[in-house]
Amino acid sequence: MKRCYITTPIYYASGKPHIGHAFTTILADVIKRYKQQNGYEAYFLTGTDEHGNKIESKAKSLGLDPQTFVDQNVAYFQQMWKQLDINFDHFIRTTDLSHKAQVQHAFQLLYDKGLIYQSNWEGAYCVECEQNYFTYDKQTMLCEIGHQLTLVQEPSLFIAFKDSKDWIGEMIATNKLNITPESRAAELKNNFLDGGLNDLALTRQNVTWGIPVPFDNKQTIYVWFDALFNYITNLGFAHNDPKFNKWWNNNDEEHEVIHLISREITRFHCIYWPIFLHQLGFKLPTQFLSHGWIVDGNGHKMSKSLGNVISPEELLAQFGVDGTRYCLLKEMRLDKDNRCSMAIFKDIYNADLANSFGNHASRTFGMIKKYLGGQLDFIEVQDPQVKQLMDQANQAMVQFDTAWNNFQFYKGINGLLQLVFQASKLIDQLKPWELVKQTDYTLLKQLLFACVRCTQVCFVLLSPILVHTSTQIFDLFNFSAQARSKTHLADPQQLQKISLAPVIQPLFKRLD
Ligand code: MSP
Image (cartoon, rainbow, N blue to C red):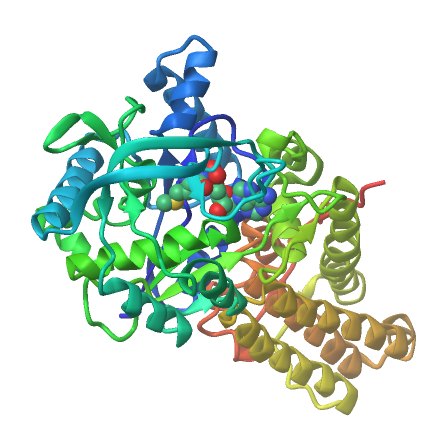
């Protein structure tokens, strides 16, 4: 069986989730549901990153101990994922005992291989991003996102990259890591590899809120080393848990491991993480999907520390669960940064959901009710114009899969919008109200059948996003289990005996 393991970054448990966290998590959820629809067994991991300087100092500033602080914030994340209908399989917390023990195990393994050595760490550090910068603006002392940098100098244990430097250089130059979009690979090469990859400081003397170094409890392990290992600690890699072989360390051909990340953490995922795995002799992920940022009107990354975010609560209140999932997925092009605002989302909601998909389904429902008493059987389409619409539905299906398999979600959706537009044009042209007057029921039934077919194709394909509305629509048309499934979507014969529900509620109410 085809298998897919999909992960989000684990988010800092330093506050409530914001729009960026919601976007990546919805994306992972949609990919999981899409893979399942296409016959994959899928496992989806998300969670929270709970150690380090940033969490420790934020908790302190609120007069809380770090554990109480993260417990509160983790609850916000879990509630929000529930509200957004995120169907994850496991939620990992880096304060879990099992995770901590396994991170120490990984550290010890690398130490035993002679790859960890003592030296002096010096550089510019961003506490918000929990990362050091080699090149930075010495005037402003701000990181690329706009956070304050501080200069640090302290003894630390380092990981030696030695031969891994050439190995990772080659992996990235030939895009064997499968980083999407490919432009990120070039950025990594220019910014971190061409000038020579520096060894990484793996321990902290001044951070107490962290996992102790296994053989020296006066030092803690650097939060990024701790965090990256979540992807395999949750599979019990250190205990020979069968889950580790099933979801990660195997040679199965039809096995995918997809890490979703955004561009500012690509260095950690696509340089350091593959090196650690390589040093330990483990398999690599098969795909890194590094999306751009949601930015405000001035092009600045939306982030809580900059105070320019839209909250997921605001989105849910305005657009509902399906509307929020749809607007985020439709608006975000993964290969670039995307300006977002409530006004932009409202336009998408009205244009796509209310006026196109929703309107097509209600109009089709209304016509079948009015002209055919709510009943329609499968019918062989003969009329050339209606046949063309049926063909367009089939083409849209194929194009949708091509786009989604290349992570071009907006493109697949645009194809469906085009289909609904063609359907609407044909209805206006053939004028069902005239066909009734002329008692041309053969053509009328063919036309309405094709409209049902377009509704089916759109909502089966959109069901990984529109988790509630798609079911609502299938129920309205009384679709059989087969007619709701992707497996049988190529075959219009699954649409037998359409028998409408008594009434239709507005599907996506237009927002003013
Ligand atoms: N804890 C680290 C990740 C460790 S993974 C081993 C971290 N956490 S974070 O809370 O800052 O979350 C970063 C992730 O949130 C980004 O990679 C991205 O997935 C999402 N986003 C946060 N802000 C975002 C935008 N403004 N736009 C899009 N997504 C962004 O980094």
